[in-house]
Image (cartoon, rainbow, N blue to C red; front, side, top):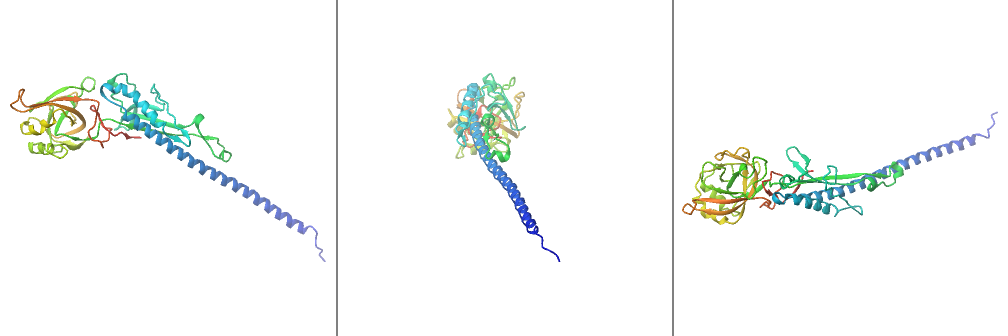
Amino acid sequence: MNQPTDNAPMKTNMGRRQDRGASAILVAFMLVALGAMVSLALNVGHLMLVRGQLQNAADAGALAGAMSLRTGENALLSLDQARLSAQEFTQRHRTDVQQVSANLNSTNDPNGDIVLGRWDDDEREFYVLYPATNEDAGHVNAVQVRTSRSGDNALPVFFSSFLGKEVASVGAEAIAVIDGPCEGCSIPIVFAECLVVNPNDGSLVCNRNLTFTNATEDNMGLTMLDGRNPNTAGVLEVLRSPNRCSNVRVGDIIGVSNGASLHPLYDELVEYEGQEVTVPIIGNDSSDCSPRFNQPTQVVGFATFRILDVRDVNEPGGQGIDIEFLCDRGGSDDHALGGCTSFGTTAPITRLVK
């Protein structure tokens, strides 16, 4: 007859203890994994938050710096102001409770926090410049700002024991550009690029006086600021419009014509005496100033002129308009974005390109 053994219950109890041990190990692994996931989510969220704060700081600094850039005789002085403005507006921001910092980078080190240069919109590239003259400084149209929490200022990692990392680095970058306006409300007079640009070095001939007449062989003419061939009625329509100007954009093809009499326009044009006006510049290469004013031509930018004197047929000197080409001027359209070629007139609104 079979006899019950004393060790059977003992084996059952050992199995249960082994199951409980395996469960404890599994729970421990799950807790570690859960802790790592929570830690990762918390740190990634914090990292993204700080990166957004750094980006806001870089954007504000770049926009403020670009807004301070100038052309003409104040171009070189404006570079220092651009750095100061970029630094000031960058450092108005915080990450967590810490103020964002930005070094002035007066040597314009390409790896610095605040870098001045030129943005090429066609190539979508930023080129660092080292201007020494007003002429060179006039080519600076962009400010790059970098912000970061790195090195000794890196972000602390929450629950670092789960991730095996004590700190994390994060940064942001912005480039803002200001240049010539890409659009403007212009009067119906147009000038060739070669009249305002020195063909020898590409500099602007600021404060140059010009006389607009009804000559058939010059680089000034009338336009209706659209693709139609200009006529007196169409030009008068623009001059008599509510804004006394018409909107046109860089890249638009406008009809231009010289040789027309100014006499029918005298009563409207004389009202501009002493005023600054915006006019389109058309793409006549500055190295080739041969007249091309009786065909549709592309607008390449805008310039500001002061109307000095408007004369009718019977006045001394004959009919004509004496004008002065002005540099270091803001665009007349308060809503015009910059980023197009500057002919001494800058757009009132900077734009972020990166």
